[in-house]
Length: 348
Image 1 (cartoon, rainbow, N blue to C red):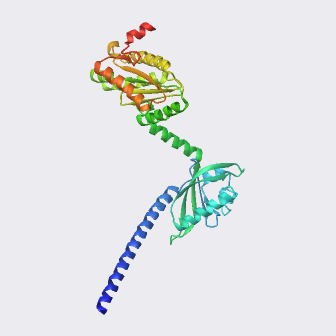
Image 2 (cartoon, rainbow, N blue to C red; image 1 turned 45 degrees about the vertical axis):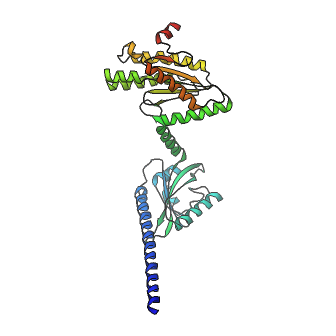
Image 3 (cartoon, rainbow, N blue to C red; image 1 turned 90 degrees about the horizontal axis):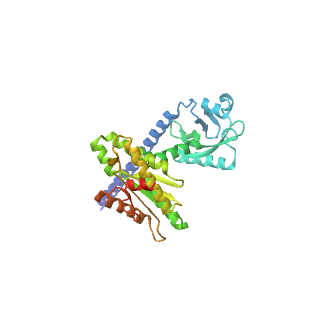
């Protein structure tokens, strides 16, 4: 009986020790990860004296400034020799209850869990002018990993917003033709269609399909000329696009345009102008007029309250596919079936 009890106790102790070892290993990995991040951050922020518009400084646990880069001091209008050891409040950081509470809470959080944080702060210059900054904060640790202060690496919020906007624009752009890419275009098309439906406004779209002429040029001339053709026609579409409209490339060889507050009659005129101008642009690339006309242009509009943007897209795709299968080029819609380019010229 005693042997059984001792065996149970031994097993329990062994399990407890194993669990404790697992916990210690996990904490060790977390600490190592935090140290790697802090070392990397320290290497990046160790020398921040270049005049790049960014502000770098350090404070201790009493919120006194312990270090500031020369470029930061110059940008804020302070002297590095006189600002050191002063309180960060009412000098670099605006002295308000909200800012005080934010920094105190941030320091307490970093002492509990040492890791980098991103916050917005209002910094002030020596002349008391204020500036909203986006700041990256990291804890300053001693030899036993206790938090002794915070280092700040700040940049103007407007710059951050500009970078984010540039990144957003880049993600939405078809780099090849400098129009919207397919995902961004269809997302905006659905959004604008729903607004037009909500407010019962006119809404139309025009699509030009260049598949056949692209294949002819790429096989008969070369791919470089075919790519130039896409860019040229894309520019033609952009130049003719009215206000409150958008354009993008879909399915590689289609240019999709949609227009807010635009009735069907104006969409038809736009389609005719683009058809004529696109042919002229392609002819400049050493393509004869007959083959330059191997394109399909179609248009449609929001018909009624029950119409959907999926139905609009389906209609224009149906027109295009039917025309391509029958090799009918020119203007194709439910109004006019295969109006040739010559007929359009006679109208003019």
